[in-house]
Image: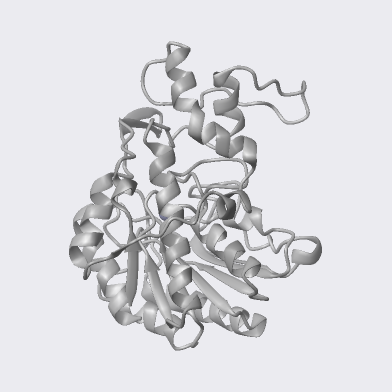
Length: 334
Ligand SMILES: [Zn+2]
């Protein structure tokens, strides 16, 4: 299976994030991508598809914010990385976005996703890696891997969050549709619900979103990922959420996976995109499932047996020492 990555994705390296009431070292480190690269055969350089496929998903004002906020933050005399710390209240005064502090709140979901001067470049090339994997499938490959880092599934049309800035899976899905595919399915098997992906396609009937994740009653992103969220309008029934309790192991996971795969099969996609997070791993420091390294091949085989052209896009996974073998195990299983 061909895989894609650009070294510029490593440049994004914020210092700190807000976690459980304190500032801790940023968990989504460049070392994550290095460990995955080291465990796989050589990845190919991503091709540059420009900003058009990014702007087909993301708000232009938000993209401008990602590009310009670090310089504006520094000009305003703010120390450290750009991090939202004040948020507009829905339905109150019209939001004025002339201050960088207001913009940082307007365009962010949380305070755990800082921006540095290198973030835009890294996020841009992460999206290009996903688009390059899509090219491989369009030219006949059955499957392709994109080492997307930073990850993407928490980023919405006009907001960052959960270590995500550009929604790589959504950008690839939209590019598939714009390239003539009638239906694209996104299967999200990261530990966390992909609120951004769900949000982007919430009212769309041409992109099916299925997610297996930790119950939002106990886990990030808390507001979304409940079983009764099924989409609206033309998208009603095109969202499937399968939350699982903390401690879930491979048997419960595969049961939910079978349900997701059956729903996607009924949808009959031209392309499946797997948002693959290895933070379902038993020893992940910020997560609570009990998937073992050897289980990833089984999960991948279940998906591969469905026979769809499949783009695998990297999402989370924070047990850095085990990350390479968990990802390599998944890809080998596929
Ligand atoms: Zn995650």
